[in-house]
Image (cartoon, rainbow, N blue to C red; front, side, top):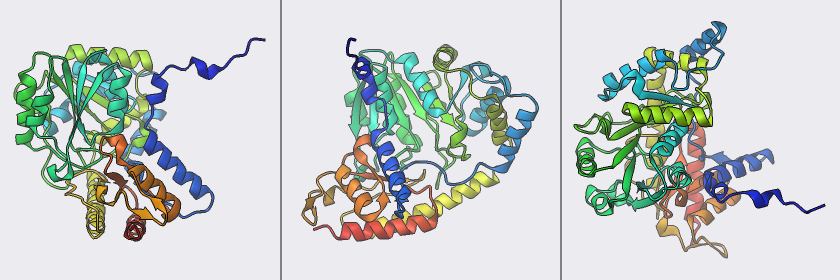
Amino acid sequence: MTSFDPASLLVPRTQSADEGPIIRMAQKSRDLRAKGIDVVSMTVGEPDFDTPENIQDAATAAMKAGFTHYAPVLGVPELRAALSKKLKTENGLDYGVNEICLANGAKQAIANALLSIIDHGDEVIMLAPFWVSYEITVRFCGGTPVVLPASVDENYKVPARRIAEAITPKTKLLILNSPSNPTGAVWTRAELEEIATLVKAHPRMMVLSDEIYEYIMFGDRMVSIGSLAGMRERTITVNGFSKGFAMTGWRLGYAAAVEPIAKAMGRMQGTLSAGANQFVQRAAIAALEGPRDEVERMRLRYQQRRDMVLKGLRAIPGVKIGDIPATFYAFPDVSELLGKKAGNHVIDSTDTLCDWLLDEHAVAVVPGGAFGAPGSIRLSFACSEAEIEKALVRIRTALGSLV
């Protein structure tokens, strides 16, 4: 019999199609917990709150009413109409029902968008730090990421002048995540106006605006870049229900864009999966149209946790962090600590630092290299105040022991 190695059939894209460090650190923390070790995990960006009861009730009612069958690929008309209203009243975005495409999570909505407009040779400007899946998906589509880093001193926001310098005839897309994962940065209207001016001057450039954290703001309201003059046709706005409504496991996201692009995203959706879960879509209508008391309660708790994290991290020598105006992430710069020793062991990278923090101090965080910022680490404070306090004590003790 001829020898056969199934692994030899794997194509290169399988090596890059994962969120490596986040998954690795989260799984490693789970493995240690299974061994009885008291690990504090600040890895995954998942709300620790349950989905509000009115949304759960709406899903149950929808199932009992028979909404358990395939949904239209673009989404049920009632939800698309509710989203059209939401986008107009909350974001100043004027998109009709036929310009909205539902997906199985915002991640799939982003993939649908990139698969629709990015091809081999197209350049995509990515503002680092960025969410890890952006770069993975751009490469998956054959695009070329053009990574522009910003430091903590710049509030992790790349200024427009550096974006202008990176634009070429091959530029097709700029990915904007405001509020930002992993930094919590929020672009102001003035900053977005500068970016919009650059985009509108280019003959074939668009913006993908990921606004999934819009309901977890601690200051002024965010501005959708697609609402600015001349940007409606230049913007694909992506959002979803996972973060603000604590609906991560429900897997429902959406994108809004001019009709030709929305239809193309629908074709990608129909090719790779199918219409998003129908009774979840019915529950999403209840989320949009129902009371927001629980959403506000969660936001206020995140704000309290944000304050705890900022106070704790700013008290640690060698750790540098700016404000966190939104989201449930902290992204401190720890580059000053790299090269120091823990005993005889040199902490030469944030990967090494994160492994050491977990192995020796039982606190799990994520190295910043995957986010395009190798001198930083990401902490998710979507966990209880008690866990946050415990983590901060352990981090302060660990980092204070480095020499």
